[in-house]
Image (cartoon, rainbow, N blue to C red; front, side, top):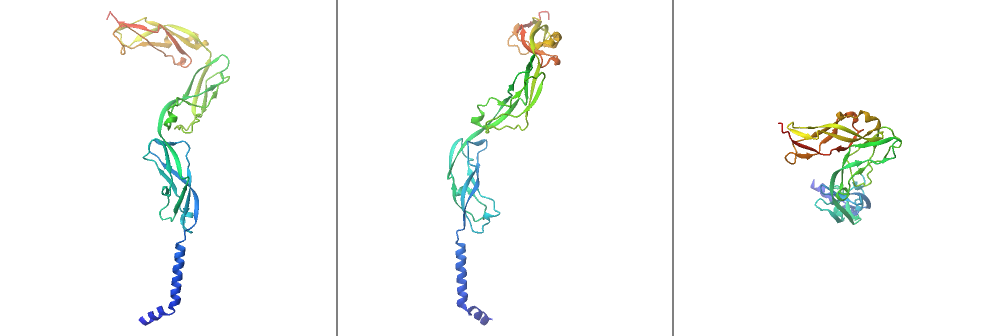
Length: 313
């Protein structure tokens, strides 16, 4: 057995040694090959603190010069690397970030070598995220038909919560919707319109159009309704005068229907600022639902009444 192995190994030993040496040289040559270089556009991922956001324009991708083996899976099924900037511990303000190969995250075992990142620096501005509730305002174009007036306009929802960078949110007092036209209208109309927000940094949770109701009716005139009794929550008090009058804005054809029973006047004794007798403003309202929206209380006469203890009790 030993004789067989000796003859097998030593037979043509110089040729065999030469073959092994050539194989080793070829293996070292292939393994030492640096591989191809490629410039690839990869996403720029910025990690920011909670309740903060990036303002102003920023690049969404960067160019990365990479090198890998000729048959590296980098060029096939491997996901592209990502350039990551960690600002989670940063404060508000401007930050100039230097981008290096260490910022580029590659798949483990991909054989990719990152050589360069372009641009070498990016400037990022962080700002606190703010939210607040503001009214929705609907511009109206045109006028209703002759002899008709706008009684009121209402949007649903009437307000909306806006969110965005603090410097963009703080100055906002209202959010406009798209304008609606009421030219020539003689009756209530309803529209569905979108918000008209020109600042892309301002965000809202509203996905549906805003409902806008415009109340339109016959032109109104001023009328006075007298002898409206003033009530109180405590019968041991008396009110002087016992009756008041209201001046209302109402459609001309409804004047004959207006009556003292359509209105209420009330004085509460629970929130008096001083011991009676004191002057106070009565709470006046419309109790006839048929008049709601068409009639508006303009003035109350007298504007104050005197409340005092009833001496008979």
